[in-house]
Length: 81
Length: 237
Image 1 (cartoon, rainbow over the protein chains, first blue to last red):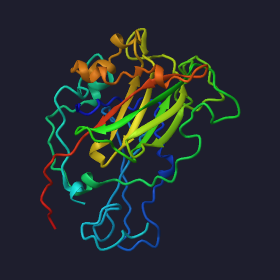
Image 2 (cartoon, rainbow over the protein chains, first blue to last red):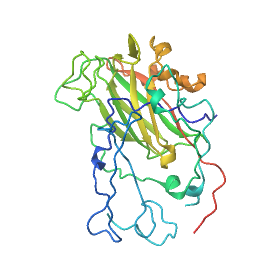
Image 3 (cartoon, rainbow over the protein chains, first blue to last red):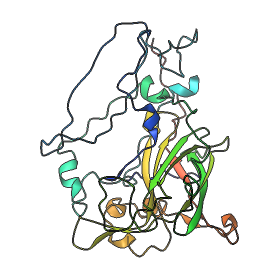
Image 4 (spheres, rainbow over the protein chains, first blue to last red):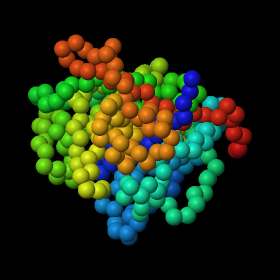
């Protein structure tokens, strides 16, 4: 018997998601192929106040359009970095 | 790889928190004021992100042995399975937990609640599900704590869970509650879900079989992540 997905609940004000080992402003090493870019911005709440403890999680393909763990061409590994 | 092109099932109405639930005051500003636009699922959401699993350390699944001494409070074992909506186990899911100590205080600089910190309890752990989607960790039962939502507001005892399954659209951040907690009927975070069964599934079950004699009470908490549709999306190159 299957159920619908478990309901989500707020991360709470005291969140400490354990992915701290991934905390890094650099998604690639200097050696990674492709054009290196920097993205910056600000996060605001609905009052327009800057959010000072927000955590952003992001992931992307490499310069060949390949995601780590999935290679649509099945030809090789994703570039390191 | 065909599996990774199958889109995730739509969310069933009422089984997730309402964006706007006025008794939960934060949702008034936090909720969208315009209708949502459903964007098509693309390969990036269907296949990732993939996390390295190397960062799990020895006592990350035992929150009672992360310091030199033992934490205060009632020791508990929490265990269960992570399944998808097709009733299949989710192996290798990264499960992260964080919680208050037995006095209802988080080891976090923002928490200034007048309850004692416990030098032997950090309240955070992480682990992976096994091939059958099973997980198990040891901790202490967290205390209830007050919050500023309304006069005399108290959060029921809970453990925060974050799960990374097969793709970002299965990402789940939720809270596990304890059976019989008298604060649940008063908690607007628990009650912002309209489907009664969906709420009940966030409450763990007392599990005598998982209880270790003279040591720790057992609780069972099974978690369901979004499942995939049976039909793969077209392979667009």
